[in-house]
Length: 272
Image (cartoon, rainbow, N blue to C red; front, side, top):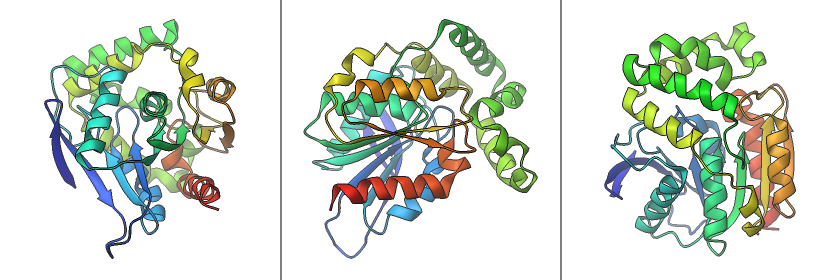
C-alpha cells in the first residue's frame, strides 16, 4: 500500500495497474462504512490489467489515520479530491459502495469535467431515515465506548444479505469479514458513522451529474434497499439500474465476480 498526507490526515491507498509504462484510464474505488479498500479485491484483480486502479482507505477506517475531525461526507469528498490531485490524475472513473457512493455522487456533481463515469453500489442520495438514525447512533455510541465486538453480530446482517450469511460454504469468508469488522478503531467507527447518518439530502443535486452512471443494488440489501437505488436513477439522467441477485449491502464481496463483470462491461462500452 502507498500513503500520502492531505487535509491533515495520513491516507493509505492501493495503486494497481499496468507496470509496462502504458497510459491507461484511471478508476478510483471508495469503500463503505466499517470496511476498507480490500472489499474491492476481486474488482481490482479483474480490472488492473487494463486500468490504473486507486483504492483508498477513508479517514478513520482501514489503515488510514484516525483524526478528530473531517468526517462529514463533504469533507471526505474533499479528501478524495486532494488525493487525486496529489496523484496528478486529471480524469477518472469512480466506483463507490454505500458511503463511497455518497462521496462519488458529490464528486460527479462538483467536478463533471473530471469524473468520466460513476458506478454506485448499495447507496442512497437521500438523508438517513429518522428510524435508522436512532439505531445507528446507538450502535455508534456502543462502538465508541466498548468497541465493535459487542455489537458485531448485529452489524453483520446489516452488511450482508441472507444468502451470504446462511451459506455454509462461505463460513470462512464470514469469519474473515467479522474479524475485520472487530478490528476497526472505536473512535474512527463512531466519527465515520456520525458522518454517514448526518449527511444532507443530495437528491436535489443529482441533476448536476452528467457522466454515464451505473447504479447497482443487491436484492437482499436492507440497509439501502432497491427503492433507494431507484431514487438515484430517477435523478440522474440516463442512469442504468442493475439489481444484483443474492446480494445484500456488500455486493462487491457477496457477488464479487458478477459485480466485476458488470463494471468491466459498463466501462468497456464507454470506450467503443
